[in-house]
Length: 432
Ligand code: PLP
Image (cartoon, rainbow, N blue to C red):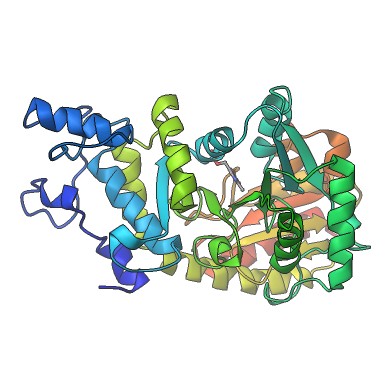
């Protein structure tokens, strides 16, 4: 069984699985055990030696303690590699590995902490999810990690906001501009960054960063022999509509709370990619203790079986709504990348929050909540919620304005969703 969809439903059975009884259950049960019994002292010692990358003598026990690993974790991490990994072959030959965490922030922070140290430099695309931005500002920077924003204005005269039908069209640029850009950035920061952190499309504006330009930037930086690690947060379009590992990223992080989980009933995060880098992150996850629990891993595993079909329906609903919303006179601007379920709506009627809140308060079918990628549609006001902790000057620069509404389109009947949006717009703009 090689194909992705099949492998999501029938994950690869590892030798650990073969040794566990499941009494013939069609689905992997939740292994709620915190600790695992060793068949012998030798097996226990071998398990710990394996974990610490010391020479292993004898047959290790499959698991020792659930913080380090458990059957539900092995199962879900196998699915994650099937979804995102760069090749499908025997498990021992896969170039990628995966890690599941207790939240998206745990995945992001643990991965960054494992790969950076005081004195390191991180360059990041703008804007970022508010929680990530605050982690950079409130933790990494005081800890001595220099965090440098990349601004599109260095490369393009006007910020490119996704509007077209396809993500495949990179913004136009001339190759020499990239080296100019790279030089300018390197000049500004004084050296080549150790890690490039990418969020495209960015939360909450759907700002697109062209992979082609970013790849050129990394290539240009790498000429000196010091290639930055490229890490991408793919929460907005993954795991179905964009594959950062194929675009040149080394690692992909997710808030699996979103489309992967898809039902607003779990908090989880994942990191997938280059096995060598993942092996640097795993020991820190084991020490920080933010490993996905058996229940979290089981819930995510259950959800991943249907992620592709859910994301197809959500995308088709979002495309329909984006087209209709774009034509409404109350909508000043709309950013939708052509793929995925996230729509950014800038409303007419002034730059304060009044109209946006009036519109949100009138929604009946669409729920007002943060989070995204669920089967129910959600709407929120980023400036006062998800991005309220971001500096107001920065919010202004990156168009996270008070008239911005973020819409996550779900799986409801699309006509019900449109009726709801239409009546809320009529309420906010009675004269149109
Ligand atoms: N990355 C993005 C793009 C997000 O939208 C979020 C949460 O909204 C996160 C990361 C953080 O994930 P979590 O809430 O699962 O910790």
